[in-house]
Image (cartoon, rainbow, N blue to C red):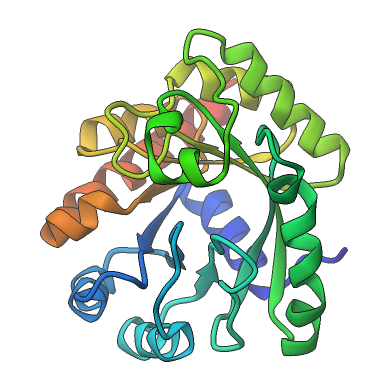
Amino acid sequence: MKIGNVESYMNDIIAKEGAAYAVLIDPDEKNYAEIAEKVKDYADVIIIGGSIGICDLDKITKDIKEITNLPTILFPGNVDGITKEADALFYMTLMNSKNTYWTITAPTLGCIKIKKEGIEPIPMAYIGIEPIQNTAVGYVGEVNAIPSAKPEIAAMYCLSASYFGMRWAYLEAGSGAKFPVSSKAIATAKHLADINVIVGGGIRDPETAFEKVMYGADVIVTGTLTEQNPDAVKEMRNAIKKAGLKKLEKLTNL
């Protein structure tokens, strides 16, 4: 499957700046428009999605696009999380779910609508890492959480994903997680697998974001942080971009 415009845009940012910053907006949040307004000058891309999905997704996605003028990527919690108003969609498999519905059935049920609506699919492995089992996605997705002390397991999933032809892997600790994905898991995954690594969950401060990029994260996602303190995104972006350039410099000198 060829690379589409949004995926190319993200790849270009990673190549030039070392890392991209994505802000996740839960469409079920009543203040989604306020969040979008405050992050529009700092995010590289807006991800729209949640684990429940009880909102008017068409309207909300359209509103967010008009407010931010940024590419929007759907992060569907289920087959009802699809709208033609979005630019792209993470076409993902929750690789370490205990339920095959989340690994293959849900994305398969949604594929015809994605094609019909002309939404750009971005092939992605979604990999749940401890403490995801204590979050909404861990519960709903019946995730067999990878222990944080076993980074090689996360790396194996990333390698497997790349062999399946996926170009992205999302290492997820879960929205509002008490702590983020370990830096060792990120570094091991990048070393073992030729795949773009997205990291989200539990990243609450610029120092943590900086560290995750330096260990190999290509995209940092914040969501709960943005809901609680939208003004923090400026510092988060600065840290991510500083680390990205430093990472590129380090790679150039190897």
